[in-house]
Length: 206
Image 1 (cartoon, one colour):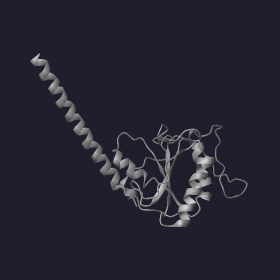
Image 2 (cartoon, one colour):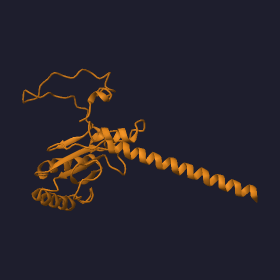
Image 3 (cartoon, helix red, strand yellow):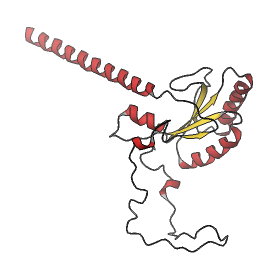
């Protein structure tokens, strides 16, 4: 579980400070409100809101979990994986893993969503067809002012949506991965400097 107080949140009303007051008029059902109509749909119908990734990675990943030691869940997961590949061939669908991988505590497979239309179609479908399985729906975001490990940890916890029972995510893996990548980069830079020094010495000898 993440601590909501660990993050800051811009006001949802940013940009609407000068808007007219909302009407108090009720709709015909007597319960809901009548909203002011602009004649223009929100751009969120066509494109994921920033900072969601509208590029190659996609705005959302769905991890569908099953208990690999449970024959019934294993069978259902394999059938669901096949059904999704057949009914939603436009989505990116990964390997059906038979053991825990990455930060995920049990076996799973992953589906990527690239547009609001795909999200709107697939998530309601999955709410019904996930059966006995659980699904983690997490955003992919592109903030450049946040370290990758922190961004991934938040996206897999505080910003996550769950269908079914929650599973604990090993968010420490994101930091360990970032540290490993940083160490590889440091070594690469050091090796490049050594190569450049070697080339310089050769030039002096000539």
